[in-house]
Length: 238
Image (cartoon, rainbow, N blue to C red; front, top):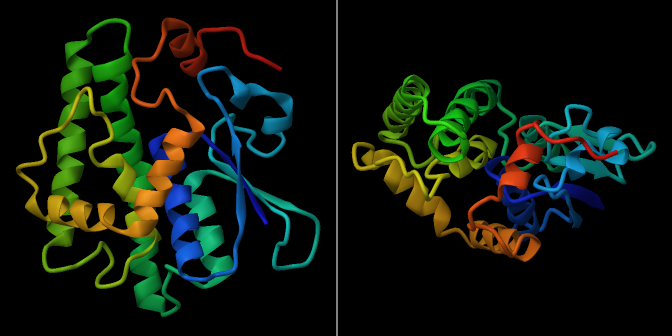
């Protein structure tokens, strides 16, 4: 059994995508969602910090780790995807070259697409003041990375080739992540084709349906108090 400490954000979606794909593949891996309401400060609670010391979700606790020992916690979305892939033998090739390609693009997302698109979202959607330099900077970088992804996908079904992998699961939630400040994807036909293919997967649809079950207010504007909590300007709960 896996406990998934989760809230429906792009990084949270990565893990529900993986867990739902594993369920569909018959990997025998059950999971239970433990909501972490980041707008209320749940990520700062002492019990959560014991498994995610960077006060970020998602995080997991595996109650049946492969070594047969005590429950094992894992934080950071990229590390969780890698852990689950290795635990189940799914969505990560075993061949040296194929595995290396998947890991390259997993870390490309973790180091680039996620942070840059996240900053794009912050300055276009959540920032209390309009800062033109920041908006242009992160819009430019988000578009540059989409161009990199579009080029990579040319002639390939998925990022690493014909097989769907954790690299795709990592990147997908960060493409078109902000409905209130959408990035124009028309210059990226390969990204749009890839995005549509993943959106049509039954596991993807189940993962995103779970998001609204956990947070019925998903998509509504964030209140000022929620912003203060989320962006670190409000007192932390313990």
